[in-house]
Length: 364
Image (cartoon, rainbow, N blue to C red):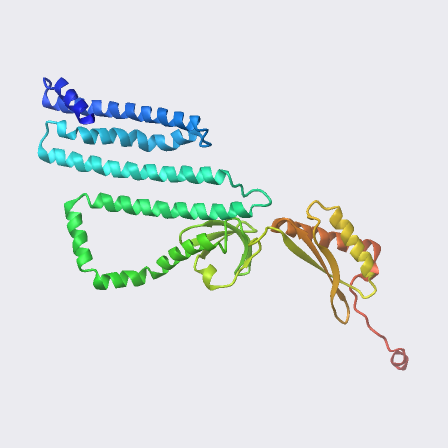
């Protein structure tokens, strides 16, 4: 049907000079492409609305309008090339150029669709809530999968563009024919990068770490902010960023405070004199926790965990919903317990005892 339309268009321009005839055919091809694009968007939006799709039509149009506005008219121009009265050399040049643009815009469309799918899927899984374990799993998998798709699309696009040129194909054939030693050298040089890439796939599947997990790596405490194809970015508590290669998480031990749940138990150590009434301190701890919005109400305990010649070591345990809340709760409990001791039992604070020998003093 489309070739018949183009032949009819060509008959309309037969009486025109060759240049204007070719330009007229290309102009009509562009207009037809834009009309077809508008029709496809209209039909597609109607189908989505009818099926009650949760995909936002405006977001879809905004995402795909750029590449589609170029892709469909370029395809129509490519179909109209046989109708142009131009030399074979110019026709081959235009054919390669339009094919080059088709590959580029198609790749652009796939990348934009990957962005749209990522945003739509992640919109159903919020990680800014307390119980976000499942959401963090999905975020980690989808974001890494999107990065893999981007790499695959770019590699295929670059390969397709290069294979359009005869000289490049011959050059590639020559490289493949003599790639014995070179392949080994390149493989050894890229071993680390390939290892990180494969570990990234392993992490996306097994998920020892996830987006927004709380980790302790190299004695640094922070959140997993980003996982790329070769490294992870940790946002530390003081807003520094720690860049860690993915192979680190399969070769060295590290702490994941949110592996199963975001809930965590914090501890506070208080050193007091032996005369301190422990039961009173225990009751004060419970009162402080009940009056705090940071405590989740699940776990608390106060125990004497160690003794020295001068002091007793009291350890207070308390639970919170997240690691940041646990940190703030520990600071609050530590401050209020010290204030309670200073106000009510100042003699219970640590002190150094010494004995004075009265007989020796009198002899002197």
